[in-house]
Length: 122
Image (cartoon, rainbow, N blue to C red; front, side, top):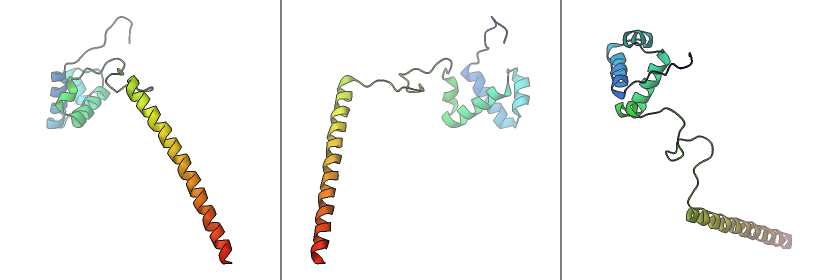
């Protein structure tokens, strides 16, 4: 795209009109692209997918730029937890590790007792 030419921005109402026209009249994406003077058929496919998944209201959501951590749609590192929640999770993790270690030792003792009981029978 040439430098200095901004991308065309479409309103939610326009997107809804295009998608509903494509679905109602059975237009191909290329036909709709020519009729409504849209830059690409992929854009209409994307709008239709959003329309089917989220309904007409999904077309009114602004989706430009990076996803924010607050919205929970950011890829990569998840948003940080508050301090109290983090401390609670660390404490629970330590407790569960201790419980697993205890159960492993208990299982080893039980198996050892069973082996000794079998040897006595022979």
